[in-house]
Image 1 (spheres, rainbow, N blue to C red):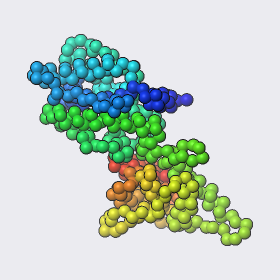
Image 2 (image 1 turned 180 degrees about the vertical axis):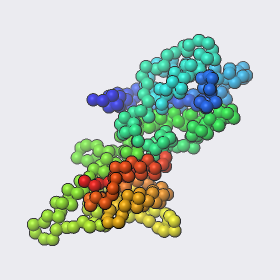
Image 3 (image 1 turned 120 degrees about the vertical axis):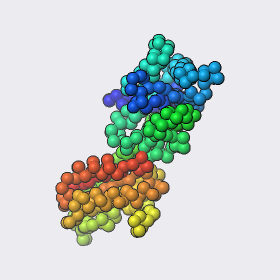
Image 4 (image 1 turned 60 degrees about the vertical axis):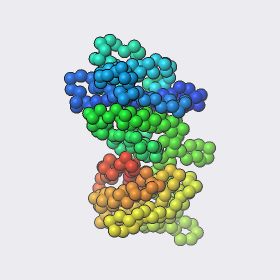
Length: 371
């Protein structure tokens, strides 16, 4: 059993037993600005999954006796280490805080730079990088770039206080500690809830939209949608041989849709046909299928003579722009049936489209069935 599965089992047990799981995040000076010193720390936030409480320590809430920015920052760092000490034995959840320039090591370096001694507490022994755990579970492309923002949007989390990294660097330069503190607290909450949804099997990523219960087992919804497409060719062949009556032929997208829907409803209770999306470029369009429980939209395409790689690519780019306006779709799955071998480089087309058209608001998975 791999390390990620062992870690998930351990965390799932901790959640079931209401054990101590605490997420931590912090905001700091831009690495571009901090050329000759460890990046300055503006604020630190913790979210306790056990109690639902969020704590944030910022330069803005330092006592009046701390008059200089250095004194205010030292106050934040001291509270950070006091919190680590008070929660000894907890599982600490974080997002990429395992790098020398950002994370526990960087905070320790900043503490020693300001005070001249090593921190009073070592980094927690039980540390879990939630970003790394998601990547190990679903692949490195589990969410578009800016993965913390993407995972929050894919799962409809509250992002009213969230600020992206560049904006946080600008806030630091303007000493807007309160806004930074609220953004950091928001991110600590998102990290904790991402872990909770992951262990509960409800997390939505660019390759996962939650679990489907079927025949006493749980199956990932996106994996299932793709697997149904993978079996389509075998079902078509079986239906093309009919001892009594006329064999069924599959010649175009409408035939594909007819069969695909019949297979889809075996696993999903609510499958909606040809859902309208708002107009785009002067015309209306419809999603072939919508699975509202998982916020999945499904588009089927059937290649033919004269339809080249670029044509399919252009169509899917337009489809993505259309579907991104649909409130019930945050994961679009495009299934392209190319049994005639019309596409020249299907694997490259899949990867290019996934990378180029996925956004933090909507993940896009493209699967071409050509063999």
